[in-house]
Length: 317
Image 1: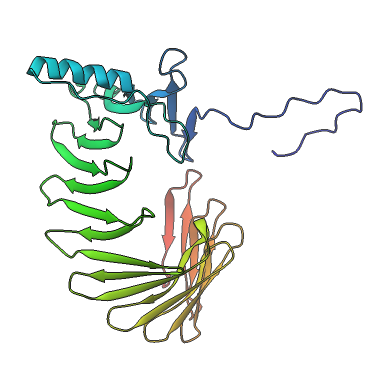
Image 2: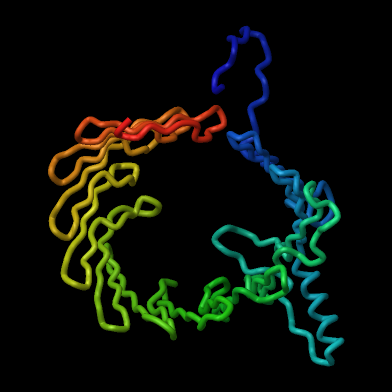
């Protein structure tokens, strides 16, 4: 609760306030399953999550590495191959998130499985490779096959210039001086160019079809309020002060309204373009329990204490 169970006396010492930042140790869902995070108490990875136990009792080890360890591993590999070792920077580039410790996730291992305790995989479930600056460069699956790859701008740390999936052509990106994507090139499909105005984004594909997205708001509340599509049609949207959509008008001018619960944000009513209304009811866990159509007929769902569907009643009874 957010209030005390009793009012302390005038001369009574008040309890210490909770710290502003607390360490996450576990996540529990309504089914009683808990995902537990294990952190190193000391050493170079102190405070970092190095293992996870899921709700089924399986334990996974998160293998971490430092910039110095990756540099040493690269040096040994280069020496064994008879080539010069790459020069790893001593410090990591500073990003908008602050200082970078250089610690990265190298691999995820399954170390315990109650269902198959004697049949654990000999290889990691997933493995990650990084550039000299600590950028993610490749992802390998449990068979050791590379499934994803990334390339970055030499002059702008963290700016991805190419991305590829296994067996697919590489997609490349170009940016403007502000760091916004201006071109996306897909060799096996449509490519796109992007133009930016104060409250609009102009998207043109390689078939010269043009779409304009008109925006409103700032930061996390920026929303697309109008789409001018390539065929000349327009779709508009309206949002409330919390950034939730409350109405949409399609290309034919038909407007659909959405009424929301102020607290949960759940849709409680849809008003169709012809004025008909569909109402929705929810339980305390925000699960849909009833839908009432314009004709007054209702469908219902009942859930057990764990949130599982226990009973369902159709509109026809």
